[in-house]
Image 1 (cartoon, rainbow, N blue to C red):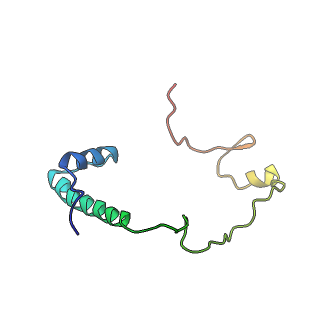
Image 2 (spheres, helix red, strand yellow):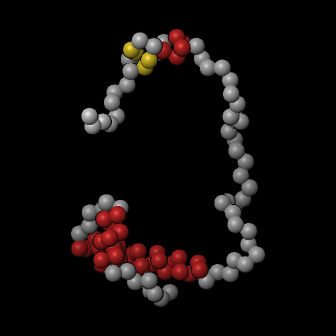
Image 3 (cartoon, helix red, strand yellow):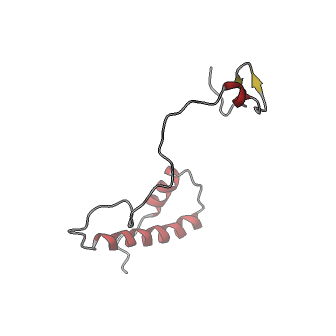
Length: 102
């Protein structure tokens, strides 16, 4: 397969910046080759005749094993709070997950 999609070092550095990935010069060279090969694979896919092929998200029929989402009464509040590790009034107290600027 020919390498028609040869990426430049600047292209790879830009992709790394967007992905927030630090790369050494050696990493850039390796990824330049790897990403160029991946781009060639996508180029090969554009050569495939897909006329008359219906778009699909899956190649086989998918059946959900999940139950239907049906509304039903909630558990009593006391039952829910009984095993809460840290409780504050009628709520479950959890540690802060992120800092909120004031």
